[in-house]
Image (cartoon, rainbow, N blue to C red; front, side, top):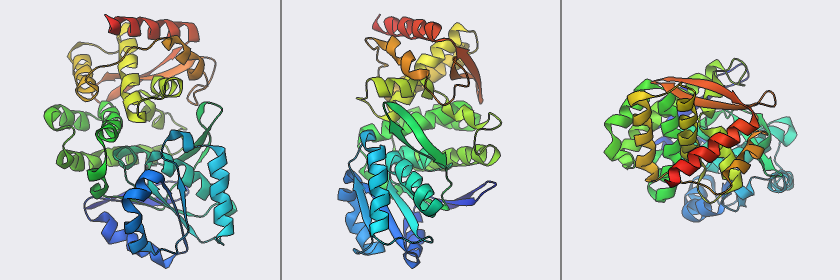
Length: 352
């Protein structure tokens, strides 16, 4: 078990990472006034654990599992329940679940009484390697992903691999989407992924690679907490197209759409001469190892209408972060019509 520190101008977060982290640190939270936010799937699996550690009387709000629950209605309902439960200024919100739970619980913690304590206990692979670290909180509105949110750092993150054993295969693929993304930004992680292609879904390997992924993101967040110098923007690799496809079609997991988005954006990078050769082939191989087959989409050009609302855009141009070479990425800015054309061409090529 290892600790990683994220130190920003506002707070210092400590991430407890590794086997035994939950047993070592969760019980210490009992000394505070707690409010737990979780989802229906996680609650069914682990309500007994929450009750044994925090007590059955600890207030808890359970949202339906899935991205659709990340909305303003549930956000206000959480805040209402916190008020009804008598939560005071020094209370602590515990986000116990995946990325959706972490996002909405984090935003509730940021808003309640102008900010209360927050602890993230991520139970999915994606949340452990990505969304629980860095302080991004948000809900969706009117078909726009993460449009209402703020940066609000947790005081602690407890990332324990014990929770990964109950994940379905789709959730493992979802987490691998973000792990591969980090690999395209970090040469050492990429090397680990290439050397362990046959073990990508092996829980022992995932436990090994979680720490290096968290360490990479923690370093980026420490240096650029609120995307002011461009470094944190690199973490959006694969997300412009991935988010747009997720909103448009919504049948796969977030991480799967990130992988699909990375594949499409890799092809755009090839067209621009930014990425190519053996490295591009290696990236494709990793993506296809997880997805088996990259899908084509009917009406994919409609994704451009959603991508123009992406928060990364600073003008009418669509910002796309693409892989360049090992450990490096680049930004391409596209007008909507060019972006539509590229998406359509790539999708048609996938159909053969």
